[in-house]
Length: 305
Image 1 (tube, helix red, strand yellow):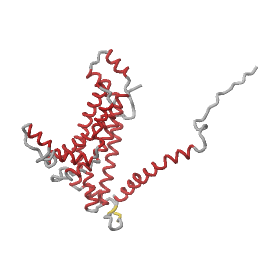
Image 2: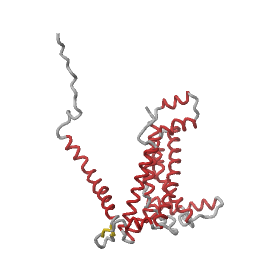
Image 3: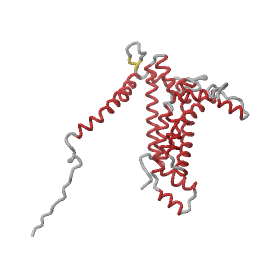
Image 4: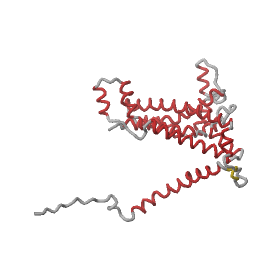
C-alpha cells in the first residue's frame, strides 16, 4: 500500500500582501526620500564637484583640477583650524561621555523619576545660539554672575571667551552642558536593556559595585556607547553656531574651528571652490573615523545572548 505524503505548504511572506501595498509604502516613503535627495545627496554631489573648481558665485565655475586640494595641504590656517577643532572634540567628547555615563548610572540605580529625566534633558531643548548667548552673559568678565562667583572664591576674574587658553575649553563645556542630558538618556536606555538577572548573578558571585560596573555594565553597554561616541564625534567636528555667537574665531584665531573657516572662505571671501575642498576633506576624515570606531568597538555586536 502506498502512502501519500502531503508536503507542508510554504507560504511566501509576500503572498498575503495586497497588490497596492508596495505603492502605498512608496507613497509614504516618497516625501522623506525626496527631502533626502534634495537636501543631502544633491548638495553633497554639488559640493564634491565644486571642490575641483574655482567658483566665486559671481561668475561660472572654472575647472581647477586638484589645485584646491594642493592649496589645502599647504594652508597653515587650515591645519591650525584642524588643531583647534581636535582640541574642542577631545574636551567635548571626554567630559560629555564621562558625565553622561555617571548621570545615566545614577538615574538607573537610584531613581526612575520621569520628572528628573525631563530636567536632565531640558538644556538640550535650548538652541546652540541661545545657549551660547546666555553663557556669554553669565561668564562676562565685568558683569557676569559666573565671574562674580570666581571672585567670591578668591580668584581673579577670568576672560572665559576672551583668553586664548580659556576660549575653546569654555565653548566645549557650554556644549557639554547642552548635550549631556541627551547623551545620558541614550545611555540610560541602554542600561534598561540589560537583564536584571545578569546583575543578580553578579551579586550571587560576590561582585561589589565597582566590579559590577566594570565587568557587567560597561561591556554590555558597548553597542550604545559606540553609537554615542560616533554621534558625538560627528557632531563635534561640525561645531559652528556656538563659536560664531560667542567668539567668532577670536582671540587671534584661537577658536577658528574648521566649520567657521569654511564659512569665512565661502560667504565672506566668496571662495566656494576651496571651501568645498575643505568640506570634502572633512567628510572623508569623518567617514574614516566613523568606520574605524565602528570596527574597533564592534558596535554592531552585543555581548548579550
